[in-house]
Length: 134
Image (cartoon, rainbow, N blue to C red; front, side, top):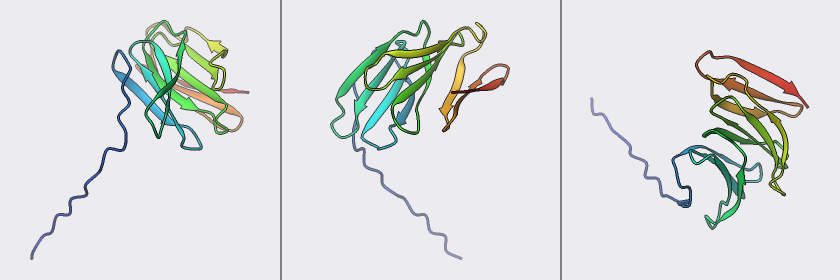
């Protein structure tokens, strides 16, 4: 019996350059026109998905940004970092809209996500998670 192996070739569409440290999390905007990245330099960046140009840089985390996500309507960004802080940002103005700090200094936010009415955080080490309704 003959075995066939199929190889799919993927083409790199865009390389985003400009973070000064490792990128730990990326996400597309709901409309697919922008990409957000969370980085070891403690920043969040918004990128143009077509040109690769950095459009905005968000500063305010005291630890490495480990997770980022867009809200379903694309108007807010949520970010989590080492040290357990979570921040919600206005995507258009780069202003921080809310902050939840020090879930536990020994944890880092492994994943953050939005739903229509709340956001969820899952933290590493203890595997704890919580939801907060908006």
